[in-house]
Length: 137
Image (cartoon, rainbow, N blue to C red):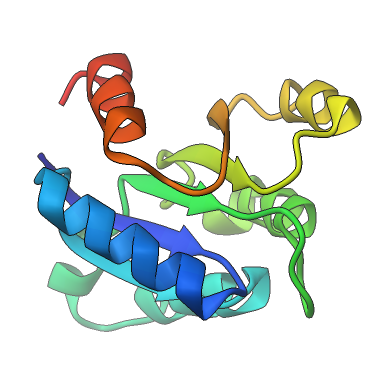
């Protein structure tokens, strides 16, 4: 079981469903959420500049990322997150979880080694079972 995962999605219903399915599957001990990429980066900045070392050690191991969001979308988030500014955190693996499977997005995803899979919404129990095997948890 993963210690912590982060779900980044602008749709509160998708986030609620994500939390519910993940909780039922014993996939992660803790699920945190962000409504867009900017909010997620703010979370990482708060961890980065926290004086509490326990906070820094408690970072998401996996990120479920939507691509199309207002304020800051998934691609823009990845462009920032994969820089040296976030090197303490970008060991987390990313699963793109999107409602559209655009062939261009699939090609673009290959440019980010941090992305380990590209799945279609909504998240499901069989999807999590597949991911458990893939990331060996």
